[in-house]
Length: 182
View (cartoon, rainbow, N blue to C red):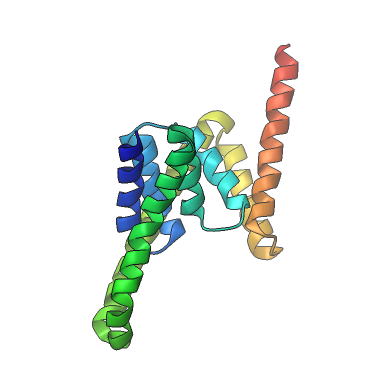
């Protein structure tokens, strides 16, 4: 299990160009689709909770999922596997890129990767929307999307606060369902 935890997060660390948000779909691919360590719903819950906590999101995901699958050693293993490649590459490439930072090909690489990362985030978002509509229906999902966008972009409320509010609403909804069935 420790080897699989390492491989899963090492692949994300190696291929996760663009930072945490760009790596989230890669983590999803590894832990939900490839290894089937979590369901989509569990991953969504962990992602939402992780976004409310300070620090890099993929490091928190690696730590939590590593712990869930391999205990404390799995948590350390997952974090090292996801951070290690980036640290080594940053140290190795810093001198090279510092000399060529104004070169057109360096800007081209960066600009070429951005659309790919955007599509990956869009696909993951669409997947979460589709799964949410199965439970909540399109009307509620659209309401929550619009509600979240308005509060975050118009009122400048921190996304973590919106996530906490939506988690609280979901918990209240589940409590009311339990009371109704009891």
